[in-house]
Image (cartoon, rainbow, N blue to C red; front, side):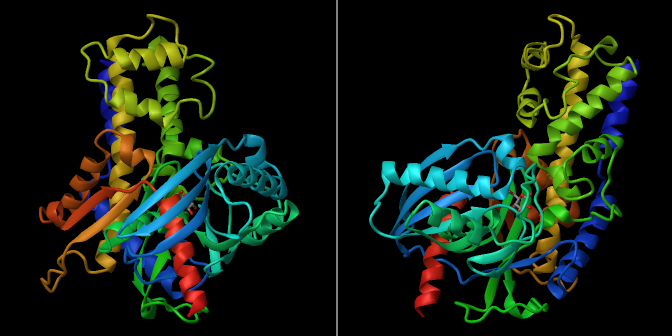
Length: 459
Ligand code: BGC
């Protein structure tokens, strides 16, 4: 009986109804306009200095680096033209010590990894151009320079905020005598858009739904009212990195629950990135864990018992939620495995009703994430007039490239986003919007951008 009531309460707490979604979309469009209008807005709307669309005919050899997701990746990419390419890559683990230490140590570590990679795969005698995918808010001043606004996603290195990460890394390359030139600094969303556009030039947005979350899209340069020195561009459009994770840090419209508030309060960036914290993979597990603990403390879940694992911050991973949500077995065996074998609750101690409640918690947190992400996309679609507007005009379809483990692996994520768009704008959205998984943003995309940067420099 108590578990049934808990179940209902949880579903209600994590529900974002259609009216609320409309209100969020409206606010989102307003925040986008503020970000395009002036510097210092909550949703930063950062010009990426990437203008023009790739043709697929780009050619050349590039290095690419990816920092900001779960691992550091170093890639060597050969663009072959005709949308074809080859890519070799190596992953390196970035320890928590590096994530929270001095920026100089992080840069030296990255330089060591690049050195290691080049000795193994590369040509050590010619200078290589590198596209640096640095997936944090950089206020860009050119295609290969900018200032780190703040850290996100659990990184908090000292001596980096307010500085140019490209300069800091280039210095580390010099210290190691590496012949590598940082040709472009790239947000992962922009890399994702470019990687997809290399094969499908009609792609309009690049979205990350992974450890963190963010989106970029093509904006008319004339709509970017704030001052920025764009100089010569390849076209009259520019990709804008929205940094949407910061949306509603004022806490006016997002439906934060007590479980979100607890997670936020205990994070390294309190009251920042609140939209991202309700959407992305780094945080969903923690929200679900807080919810479980709440119901344990009310003696409604697991007979009131927890475990040291379940009591540990960040220990309940979003990947476990995927497993639990995908569990269709009669006795919820996979859920039992996560709870009893991984989270270390005593063997045989969870009842079927406990496991059902945990499944509902995961479903509710995951569904809310997809619906909120859809609100962000709906904001861009409205802003770009890509839904039928009040004037009844139909402005065509929209191809959206998405990367990230949440989109790729979380059950029903795409379906829930589509349903939310349909609720907002009607059935036509099913054919109007196409989501496609795009994996090589930080390798292929960063290389395409490095190539476009050298094209621009040579003009
Ligand atoms: C960063 C963005 C990035 C996103 C996805 C956020 O935390 O601020 O720059 O695009 O994560 O990786």
